[in-house]
Each structure stands twice: as C-alpha cells, then as structure tokens.
Length: 492
Ligand SMILES: Cc1cc2nc3c(=O)[nH]c(=O)nc-3n(C[C@H](O)[C@H](O)[C@H](O)COP(=O)(O)O)c2cc1C
Image (cartoon, rainbow, N blue to C red; front, top):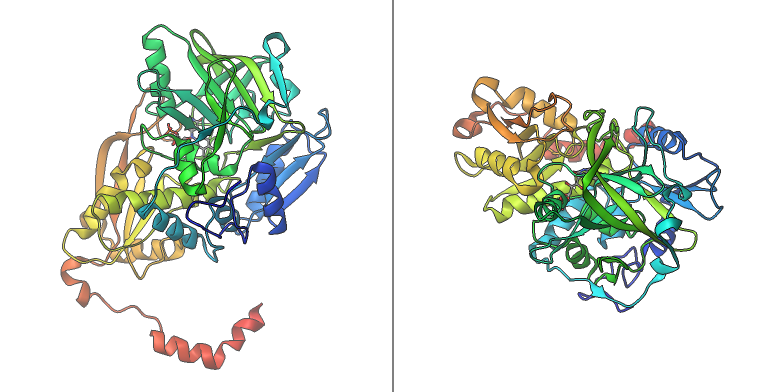
C-alpha cells in the first residue's frame, strides 16, 4: 500500500492509513482505546453492557470488542463504539491527536477547505470473499446478531452498517447507515427515513416495478461508517468522500449478484434485493433520540441471497439509545464539522466554533459561535446552520452565541441563553421543517416539525454597553494561576 497522497503522517504516528478494520483495531489498542470483553451474550447483554459503559464513562469511552460470544464460533466478534472518542476519531480520520473534541471538529473542517474526493479503486478479489454462502446456505443468524434493547422488535444486524445501492439513472453509488432487522435466516428489513438518499434510490427502482439491488456491509473500516452515517451530498459517493479523508482510494470488489462495489477488506457483507411486493412488520427500535419513537410498521423486505465474510469476522455495532450512546460523541464531532463547512461555504464569516450537543443526539440542539461583525450576522448564522444539509434533518434548537462562549460547554451555552437572550425578541420559530418518524414529539402521520432559532448573543446594536462579565480579567487570572495554581493540584 502506498503512503497517503498528501504525505500526511497523522495516522497516530504511522506513515499510511490503516489497511482495514483489523489494522485499525491494532492501532487503537496500542493507544489504549479498546476494552476486550469475553462471554457477553448477543441477547440483550451486549446492548446493556455498552449502555452501562458509555453512561459510566461519558468523557473518554473505550471501544468495546465483544469476544467469545456464547453460542457462536470462538473467533466471531462484535465491535461497539469504534469512533466514539476524540483520539479514535483522529486515528480513523488521520488527524493530529487532539486534546479536546473541538480540536477534531476544527481539523476536520480545515481539511474540508481543500478537500478532494478520491474515488474507490476496483480490484479483482479481497478477503471479504474468504467465505461465501449462496442461496439456500444463507443463514443470517449464524452470525452473532445482537438483540439490543428490551422493547426492540427483533435482532438488528445493521446498526453500524453501510447500505450500498446504485442509482439506476446515473450509476451513482450511495452508502447510508440505515438500521437493518433480521426477519428470518434470509430476510431483512432496511428502514430508510423519508428523504434519505437510499430511499430515493429505492423509489426509482420501484417506480419501474423492479426490485432494488442492495448490499449491506456489517463490518468495515470505521472511516466508511463516518461517511455513510453522516450527510454527504446527494450524488457524491461516500466511498469517494471517505477516500478523500483517507488520502488514498478505498479498494472495492464487485459483488456476485449485482456488481455492487463492496469494500474488498470488509468483514461481512450481505447481498440481495429489496422487493416491491412484500412487506413485514419492522420496529420498534430504541433510537438515538433516547426513545422508541416509531412504532412497529409494515416495511419492504430485502431477500438475502449471498453472505460474504472473512474468517473470524468482526461485526460493527452502533447502539442508539438515551444519550450518551456508543456513537453519539462521534456523531456530534462530524456533524459539527459538516455544519461549519456548510455555513462557511454559504458565505457566513466569523465562525468561531460549531458544536452539536450530545444530549440532542447531534441533531436536536446545535450551537454556533460567531464573532459578531454586523447587524443581522447572528440571524444569518442561525438560518444557515438550521438550513444546511448537515443540520436540517430532525433539528429542533439552534443557538447562536458570541465567541467568548465555548459551544461545547453546556454550562456556558445555557448561561448565554439565560442572560443574553430575551425570548420575545430573540427566538424565532421556523415551521413545517424536515422531520421524520423518529421524532418523539410527533404523532404518527405528523410529517413536519418546527425549529427554535435562539439568538443568545449580546444584542448587536448595544453590545459594547452590555454589562461587563463578572469574572477575573485575563491578566488577573494569569497572575492568580501563577501564584495560587498549586491549589488546583491539591484538588486532584
Ligand atoms: C448509527 C446510525 C444509525 C442510523 N440509522 C438510520 C436509520 O435506521 N434510518 C435512516 O434513515 N437514517 C439512519 N441514520 C442516519 C443516516 O445514516 C444519515 O442521515 C446519512 O446521512 C444517510 O445517508 P444518505 O445521506 O446517503 O441518505 C443513522 C445514522 C447512524 C450514525
């Protein structure tokens, strides 16, 4: 493998990006970022152990590798939370090791300024074909598919997955992370929310009365998950997007049935078609909002006719639920960087930071900090952040703050809202916005939601007369630290 195109050496000290999930895991382990756990059952235990650990360690959660899963071959593993820390995100994306989540946001957004996609390279074979089950031999439950939350409608093979589909009109290949439930040994339900690219593609096949070819990778390089699970523009392939971050192309092989490009080094890929003439109950599923918001519904099914897998495969899992979850931090970082990039490309100057708060699942409570430069600047920031591709779907609150507020710090943000925002003047409501069935505040059939745009900046017209902040000046703080900083050490 050649070194990254731009000569980056930020892959945690390595001179080239990791080759695949296995090499990523080795590197993450050397950084002390992986917790190996043996003997955890697929039935509820994996989900509950992940919840226990991610709730207990919100500040620096490890990735969890579930090994020796009862009832399954010894080498079959499940990996939870691959990208869910600032250090693992930096490792995955090939960015400098950060001290703070906002360092990754900044580095990611800086990269986007000169970002170039790198399309995937088609190769003839790969480890994904080490084992191939065809037709009657397909048995999805031969894999350690977790049953994640008590009220789920079934076992979900796809959570940290890549749903790979080709647009029948243009040939564009889209990758999206959409949940996939196992109905039986060779039938799966893939839930794609209205407006998602995979759903738009499926509708094109159904419009012509055809089944929709699909491949789903359920174990792969976490970098592909970061692109598939976040908003990449319509018409752009997530392979090329992730390749741009990697600095060299991803290698893909053509699947047997539909020649769909699948990662050559994927751990497990299933392939078949979503058919227009069969539906089965899908859901409920504990979701990222922290609720089982969408009830069980009839949805189209995928008939699975191939399972490709490596020896001793590693399945990737992302368990949503009441935040923090095993991917909520990573979602906030990438989403913040994408919104930052979107608003700057739309012409917004003076952005000091963007942070999508974890309790809002990276969507429901987003904060943008600006250096206010003109009347109306704050409102422009709100409208653009709320309307951007990355920030639009299922949003709720967007807050703009001055640049003395750290947007990642909820204490700071709430203080700004409580003191600089006069609700009658400074909150606007946007109606009939892009929502979805996962919104817990919506009733079935209610398609839209609303947004609160909260201006928590000092009022621009009299910002220089705004009462001074009651805290030590930078000079006084420095003097105190020099003389009395040792007291902090005593606090531990
Ligand atoms: C772990 C995880 C699970 C997700 N599950 C779903 C899902 O079940 N259905 C859905 O429509 N979007 C889901 N999403 C959101 C989409 O992956 C995301 O909006 C992405 O941009 C969709 O790809 P697209 O823009 O190509 O449609 C999930 C995201 C993550 C990170």
